[in-house]
Structure formats: structure tokens, C-alpha cells
Length: 415
Image (cartoon, rainbow, N blue to C red):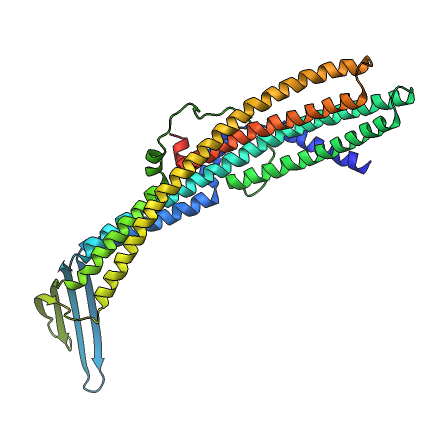
């Protein structure tokens, strides 16, 4: 009785939710684009990389500074004041600023690929959660139908048993099937609630809300396409990011050699000073300075060797990124094709078993089919219906995984 009451209450709650306004996948994408926490964090990291680039570019500008002072000598009771304005500019720094800015530019490009990777991951999470809700909604409906059918069958078998037309084992099995169906229905309802929470988390909602998602199990990817996996890999965030890291390492190696060059700096200053409130004596100065390090304890050489090793590693990582991404693309594409074919197969099984069940019901009512054979066909029907649902959901998940390896971002969805 308690179990039945829980199922009734859960069913009522789900019915209330299903009567709530439907939300589409596009609605979810818009909400996630504005509220997903991972996406917001990635955007801040990208902003930091943009600021780092601005910091590196600031080396092109001169440095301006100003100082002022007012002091009193207690011993001889003198009061002095002064001010100074100074401008300095690096005329030549051994190309250090040039390579620093180049590295900052490549690091910014890499940061954008990191953001794109996060954005693609968020899109995958939203899509996966949305698919789970669609699947759970269907499973709730299927389990409710199965429970009602099992209940009706159990009542019918009981009457046949009491009338001497069926043995006790058949009646007990029918009762067990009905009990299992009730528990499956309760589990489906709880599964829908959990799937909704998963989607809320992907959307960035701080609290759960009642909703039903619009159902669409159709694939959007053209399965007849001939893919150039290597070409697709070269524009993926994984490979682009590895390429930018390799470029950064190359500029870092160039920068490591700048210690072998002299540096040249220019300065200009204007200031004045006064004593005991007298007139301010002003002066203007110009300066030019050069420096060159003859020996730094092999620091420059060691830094260059280290940078050369880092460049070799980055190029190896780039080659590996291309190879692994090509494989991931082939793997995910194969999985998508297999999943799509499985949908067709499971649909045919479902349709065949639905027809067999209609025929079996009529034959059992007429006494032309034994209980064992009838219940076997009934079980196959239930399994095929669930398998068909799982196959459709799996195909959508495989498509989402394929788009993720391609690097399809939240932003690209709206283009």
C-alpha cells in the first residue's frame, strides 16, 4: 500500500511537471549561454589573456614619471623643495619586446582555443542532459503503460485461475510482473527528476523548476557525408591550440637569444628646486645609455637550450594532437553511423513485436496460445520498446559527441 501511494504521489508530481510549459533545446542553449558557470569562468580566463596581451604591448610606449619633495633640515632650519618630470624610452632591447609581444599574441590565440574547448564541452553537457530528459520523459510514459497493462493482465490471469483455466504459477508470475512494473514506474519517475536536475545544472540554474522539454529524436547531421578527417582535425580547437603553443615556444626561443644583444635607452627630464622659499631653479636634461653583458655565467645559453627543448616538445605535442584528433574524429563518426543503424534495427524489432503482441493477445483469449508463450511475447514487446527508446537516445548522444570532437561551440550553434 505504501509503495502504491508513493507511486501515485510521484505520478501526480510528474503529471504536474509535464503540464508545465515546454522548453526547446534552443531555449536551453540560450539559457546556458547566459548562465552556465563553466562558460562564465572560461570567459574571465580569456579576458585575462587579453589583458596580458595589452601589458606586453605597453612596452612600445615611453615611460613617464613625476616626483616632488618638500623637506626641512631641523639642524640649520633650511626648507627645500623640488620636482622632477622624467621620460624614458627603450630604443633597442635586443628584440626582447618584439618577441614578448609575439608570444603574448600566440598565448591569446591559445586562450581562445581553450575557451572554445570549454564552450564545446558546455554544449555537449547541455545536449546530453537534454537527451536524458527526453529519454526519461518517454520512459515514464512507457513504464506507466506497462504498469497498466501488467495490472490488467494480472487481474485477467487471476480470473482464469479461479475459473480453472490457468494454473497458480501463471497467476503468481503475472502478479510478480505487475509488482516489477510498479517499481520500474517509480524508478522512471525518479530518473526523470534526476535528469531534470542534471539539465538545470548544465543551464546554470541555482534551483530546480518544473518543465517538460520538447521532444525531437531526429538527427541533424548528414550521415552520407564524406569526411576529410585530417582537414577537420586541423581546424579543431585541440590542434589549433597545440599549434599556438608551438608558435609561442618558437618565439620564446628567439627571445632567449636577446641576451646576446646590447640595449640602448633614451631619457629626458625636466625639474627644479628651491631653497628657503626662494625662486625655483629649473633644469632640463637629456640622456642616452647603452649596456652590454659580456658574461652572465652561461645563463643565456642555458635558457636558450631550455627553450629549444621546449620547442621540440611543443612540436611533438602538435604532431600527436593531429594524430589523436584524426582518430577521435574517425572513432566518433563510426560510433554515430553505428548508432544510427541501430535505430533502424530496433525500430523494426519494435514494430514486429507490437504486431506479434496484438496477435498473441487474440490467440491467448481464444485459448490458442499457452500462457508461457503469451507472456514471452509480452516480455519481448516490452524489451523492444525500451530498446528502441535507448537506441534513439544513443544516436543523439553519438551525434553530440561527434560535434564535440569537431569543436562545435555554444556560439556556433546560434550562427
